[in-house]
Length: 251
Image 1 (tube, rainbow, N blue to C red):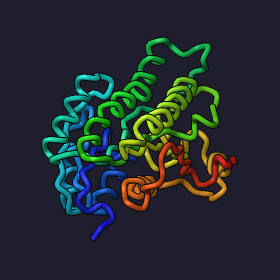
Image 2: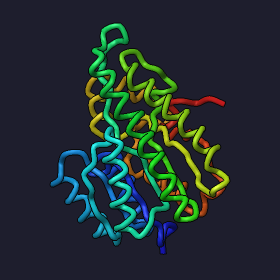
Image 3: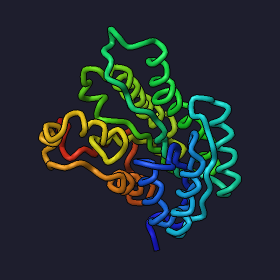
Image 4: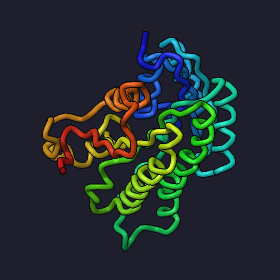
């Protein structure tokens, strides 16, 4: 018996890295899972097999998260396949480059913001009617401690994640009467393509900024999302939860 037995989850951008860890943890806890992917169908199908091996009913759907019609179609396919949706994780995103706000190209600014902010907005907005039909549930967006740290060279990413935090808190107030809970997880440095890149650039100096002294794992992010989706998280909404080994400690 898992905490999420009978739950029906959609996780965007979940063919690899943090999204894969989230989807696997939800499956291990008993949920059936639909994942979305952008390009790499082979990776997505391999992920579906891993979810099935974990005991889940699973499917992968291709989706360009910056296309609102594609996102709406993703939810329609997922809801049809699962028989409803009560758990949504808006994970799809892209990392930032290292350009300053003075030098960043307009094209790149729009790419980062369109994916990490607008794509997440389309996901959260499309989730609400599905969860309403299910009688309530949990929506979790993947933010970042970059919204707090505002590191130089990450202006587009920092702004997108800060905007996402505002959307999460706003939506949480709007849908709470319908038993829909909305939260964000803000990871610190986690095993992923972006995390590996940061370690290559900054090395041990980056680890020294983390009080617990180590990089996080996708499974640890997934465990918190499983908590939020379960009955144990039934009184948690409107929160930005920093899962970061203590990198950001504030009241």
